[in-house]
Length: 524
View 1 (cartoon, rainbow, N blue to C red):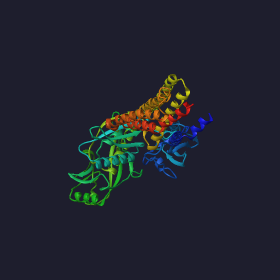
View 2 (tube, helix red, strand yellow):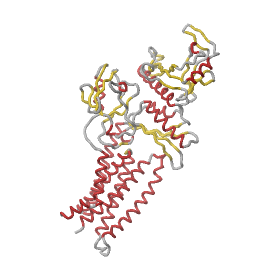
View 3 (spheres, rainbow, N blue to C red):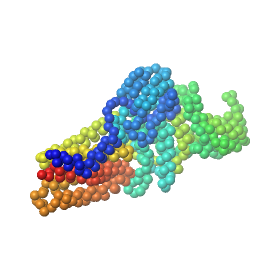
View 4 (tube, rainbow, N blue to C red):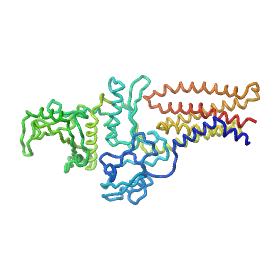
């Protein structure tokens, strides 16, 4: 017994497996406990203006366990998302204290919201896909011919738009189908916001025209700054009114700073326009018309004092509508943020079409996670039972069970390392990888146990024969997975990648270690 134990702890392949297992557990970083993590921070919200430091949205791609966690609001301890909202709703307007695992903040609470999107505290570094966590996946197809530079520009622009819009946990990636067509896949974790779809599909060609002459366009060339602070942007005081039964309207306004060239262009165009005087003031005979993607979004009167005057500060106004006053206010704010975002980022090089959009609620996603974990555990347990009945020897079935658990851990550790999301397809791939691992282990066990029939073959030759079969099956599976990498415009990439990684780790790490376990345990 001592000799076998010594061989176990000194065997190179088993040591390699143990080292990789330790590294995988460090990467996964499992922990326990409840809490609420910050998913994102809305721009210009009370949280973004907290004292002494503004609360910042987590960086894209951050490890789940690295998120800032809310621990207290005033004297109340926060242990769940539901409790977080309950405590906020119970507080009156005024200054509140918010404590996290990093800092303490004072926030001017308006009685309804502080601008934080929150989530349950992650207990490991495994990222779950939208079908498990909940959220929206949008597949976008560029219209017309497009090159790699344009694709990169679109991806950067969309990321900037979504970040400016205040959407957290956004992933924008390029995908291709089997025919070489390019797509852009946008994944937005957490709750769904309908306005985001409109933001994604807009090319964002913004123009301000007087007559048929363009005064300025969206983007940094003409617009130096789009002001979003509370003192220069927001709802127009007294603008909310009921315009019909169950129909309300609210106006918004914000200011922008034009470049000198754009301001001079405005002065040149307006220099000879006649002035019209009325009871509410003096204005130019022509209006400033705002176009977004060729559609008129607003028409503004031009004050007479702007004629021929290269003014750089311009006021942009618009409106929102809804079935109630609050709905109209929310729509106006959403429209304002949309307009501000497009003005900041400028236009996309081509028009975009949304070809597919899938939404999963966070509640349903949480149920999927539990069911997926349960299915995976039942699959592994079933295999252990079948192997135990077949061989009826713990020294064979036990190493197989240990190896299966090691393979799952290594796959999850690799996913945590590269930031790969585990979704339903990836879980199916993990089960397939573990199943192929069991096949390979059975091949090794059969070659090992058939010593009586193959007395003329040494242990190394029997093992070499087993691994010849294993490598042939491995390369066959590898070739089969490559087309799936591109199938469905990349939506099956998770399945293909997880299968390839799982089987490769098995062939290089767990299968050799299992073979050594078998040799040590069976060797009399």
